[in-house]
Amino acid sequence: MNTMPARIIHCTIARDWREVYAFASKPENMPKWASGLALGLTQDGDDWIADGGPVGNVRVRFAPQNAFGVIDHTVAMPDGLVVHNALRVVPNGDGAEVMFTLLRLPGMDDAAFEADAAHVSRDLEALKELMEREGDSR
Image 1 (tube, helix red, strand yellow):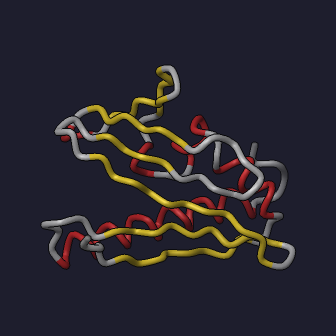
Image 2: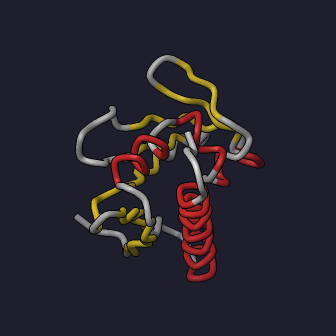
């Protein structure tokens, strides 16, 4: 079995990890920080439908709420490709570490992989900014 190259992109957030998880794990909050979902999500049973821009609508399924900070999700593309995304929030002292495992999909060139990594990094920084603002972000 072949494996794909991977990169873990992370961000430290100065806010209790449980609060970060509670906010970040709600699909309705994701458009506030996850730019790929900026147009919003519409619930459809256990799935959520997102406007995937030029590729069309994508179907997103999130891990159930849990006590471990896991926000893993699959994204089913209109062409049948299913992308598995591992997203975790873990304690880091009094704050949180948010980690996204980016997999380099077959056929993806270096430039596209680096662009995806930069995109994920910007999203995590947006989450950090939201969570570290004064007051409750929820």
